[in-house]
Length: 87
Image (cartoon, rainbow, N blue to C red; front, side, top):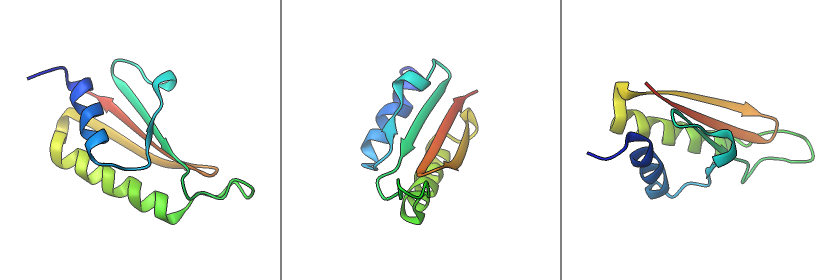
């Protein structure tokens, strides 16, 4: 079994979502992803489509990695942010 951090990054890539890995906001034990593909930039409002994509990704991560991770999903202006903490 490889490095859990790398496994999570590869798993998220395989999900083919609009969530981008935020390398600059990530550490060895915390992975940050963000999506504003459908968000309203002018109104600083996130999109329900992006939120639903985040919930789907969150569920897939929990199904795959279970109690090895903690996930936070939150809207920030037009962004939907997903943070993964490795326990």
